[in-house]
Image (cartoon, rainbow, N blue to C red; front, side, top):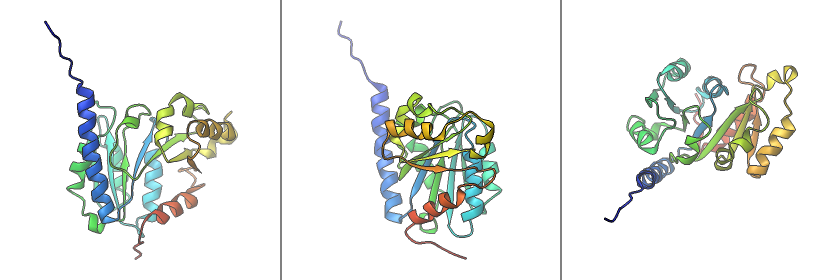
Length: 223
């Protein structure tokens, strides 16, 4: 008897890429840049987004979609810093967001009334690297508490990202962490990676980060 093998993953990924292309086209038509924030758990990306909303919320119309495995805790935290809708995607165990979920989230977002979209992905440096969400760019967030070799341990994520945020730099005096070595490891994987050194807790480096975000928006809305 002949056995026919169906590659389910390939079909699912193909459909995801089709949806992601549609998301990208819709965002481009509306002139809305989007950033997919990816990290391991505990890197501080939710606090980074909180501080970003605090600093830019009165200048930019920011939409947020946040993914978590079981709770909407991150979405609740972010909603406290904006009067705009924050959408929580609870994956019920799935280790990443997909383009279908972002497509669904866009139905509740008025893109004509939006300047910037953040997607906060599930805390995982493996699965989200393979899933295109239609974003302008992936931003990988890691911290000085995680070890300098994170980029070479999870190379695909750093290769797929366009920007990297090295967070919690306020803790450097108390840790045996070599920033230059961490950046060098990342540049081995992705020579074009642009770095931001930040402390979401103290605010260090956030001026550069928020100035960059503003520079990506075609037109800035001020109040």
